[in-house]
Image (tube, rainbow over all chains, first blue to last red; front, side, top):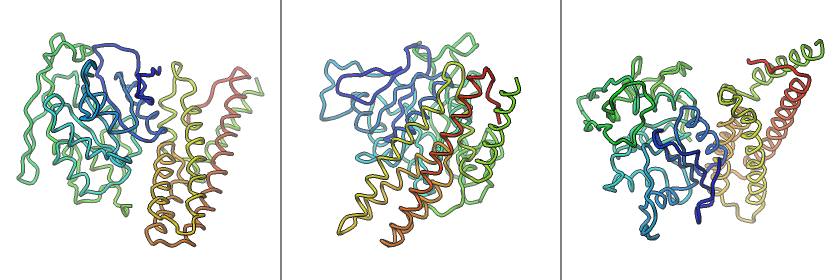
Length: 231
Length: 151
């Protein structure tokens, strides 16, 4: 269901349920927005989809030029954004979010059709939680939701990659806003796994190898890297 | 219910050929997975958006390539958009054509670009016809009281 929020044009939100994980999706492509929105809703997320980094910042109350006075600041549990967008790229949006004291702990996932390792590295180093190679599949979104907001209570450990650890502090899901859709009676700690851990899921390969394109549902982002020429 | 069975057979054969001839790829199946009773028209909706979006892009491309001094960056940006959206719906042949197209943009090869433009337009027309045919068969199956086979 779509609603017009004054001045924001292309914003659509699903019906509200404060216990659902709320994702802000950013993509300039209308087709991709529709797909990501559906992917998120089918995994029981509440979604707000916008068409630019600028609009995303406005919704988050981070746009320097628009006064956020009187604007009810949006609560988001995750931000998923396309990398290549006119105006502000996903990378630039990522940086702005990480610079913000309010939103820097919100996991940001980057989507891109271009599997350039340097780009992936740069995003992860800037604090992106994960990097998904487009086209985005249901398994990608399920995996994201599971390891970020999983109800299995398993806290993922910091993983050292190539001698370089990239620790993140564990986040407590003590905020009642957080999802209570899991069967566990008490809020389980949600860990924001280190970016490198997402490269180390079972059966994952290191970025430098050339994994076959496998359709298995638990592919890590690196497994889905196709070693074709980058655009 | 011979009519329904025949239509379903037609649907299966047609769909299979679309995958075999690479008009569609795995991503299209992904989209079908996202369709259910609560969103029964999801695939048609996304594909319709894709048609509208593609037509806009093709028009802008024709325009950009028609200029005295072609702005290859702009052409490339447009092709990139088309590549992205065709990839998102599983329209593989269009997507692959876009990749070739972008290479010519990078080389600033106008002839190559014009050639690709024509090919992309052709691929788009083909894909559009085929998808519309597919949707038509689906509608006929549903109208006859049958269900659409899952492939």
